[in-house]
Length: 481
Image (cartoon, rainbow, N blue to C red; front, top):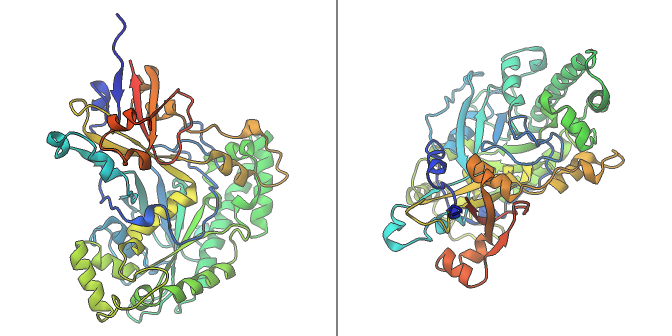
């Protein structure tokens, strides 16, 4: 007799369940509305790092990310990078933050949970007796706090070489720009100028990439598509533009993927404002930040680079407080009048404006990532874990953004979608090899029912094959033998 099909969700059965024993996660899952709507403008995805699966590409056409997505927090010394990192990690003592340059030497790394309105409710879709034992594992993004960058970092000044090596291994950069004066915090140049500070960092990244590209072009092994791609990149860098403006097609992008070019990575700007602007003047601060962004040189002028507002010092102070204590602290700071003030855009005390909510969602938009869920529908005796998985949600859009006009890209060059068989391989290799079918339903549709079985009886669940392209918000139950 053939073996009976087995249902596998987040943890699977037997050996598949053991494979997830080490995949624990930290962070807090929230149910705020910032998952789908983040107040920022972002560019299309420009790169996926070499730590992704073999089928991913740099500069467009990125496919399935590995379980880890890393974002480097960069900027000049004393602009609030470590304080922002502490706020994101919800631990005020994780990264040392002091009033002198290079207080951070070794990089600090912390996983930050992606805000998700669906996962906690999906994890509760089981029998009442087993509900208390359910576990939900959110998708996470790793943020890396690296040493400050100064003028001449591309030539090794300060901690430049160590700094650049860390950034090359990340998928994107979060560029922290200081936008407030503080007599207690020194500035490396003696004055605060957000535009000039950002230009210093951008120029150093351009110069570092230019030196890297020229060294590679001197090699006799640099031929074919790689040489053509690097020639186009060198032309952009010599013009003071980042490598992502070179309009590479997916084939040429893939040829330079392993170089880890800094300016090929998408950039997200975090404008660090003071407590008053963050709590009471967000609208004016956002307008001023957008104006600064437009004046910054050595960035992609055609791309709508993402930007968010943060108040690193304030958020680091309140990050470890519970929701009630945090709200009381904010009310004290604004003099108790914030709740009476009307704001057409957002509540001053809305938790969704905090960096640990905004930045992970902003990075997802920046890299074009989506989330798929496994776990609902699996019998509780086999698994009681619901898990969110990150993947590249729109490879076609990514390829179009990376190729540009006249770059010679074709439909054959575009990377395939993230499929059900890819998701099965994410869980366990045995599940991928024994794949039979996938039962799929969107999270929003599933939550209209009491259980996965009720959704199936109601006709909301459909059966798909191994080549089914997974979309953002899908709940997938994999049957395998």
